[in-house]
Length: 160
Image (cartoon, rainbow, N blue to C red; front, side):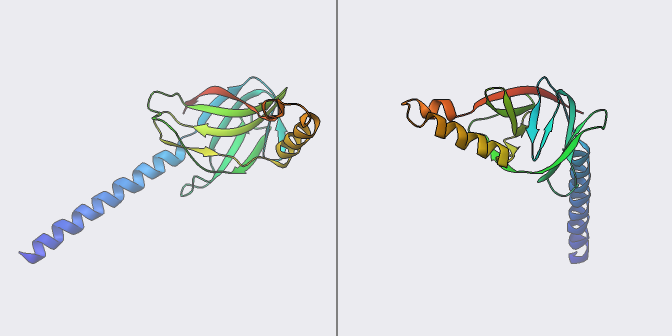
């Protein structure tokens, strides 16, 4: 009886681990496709407007992502960290978010529909420099925090 119970437990554990590996492999193959209508900064590169794929570089890690134009001519690898949604995102679409300062856009977050966590990029050196410049130029005004704070722009994307 003990052998049979042990065999059942091992079988369930094996089935569970195979299902988990299959689900992770499927998720790792998933990519986000987004048509970005403006030039934007990601990592250390400025990329032109166009259609981009965003996908994991490694199957076992969500941290490293590749942002690549669908024609394969432009790309940048990025390291991200977890972003947690303040509210339920079930109804929110898959989207890519940018910080906007005037006519400069910086890739900021990547969200998948239904997920309670997304991916967030640290501010690039170029974005930090721009933010400091804006704060310096507006420091004498009462509305300095409004001018130097970025606007958030969301672009709808789709899963493929």
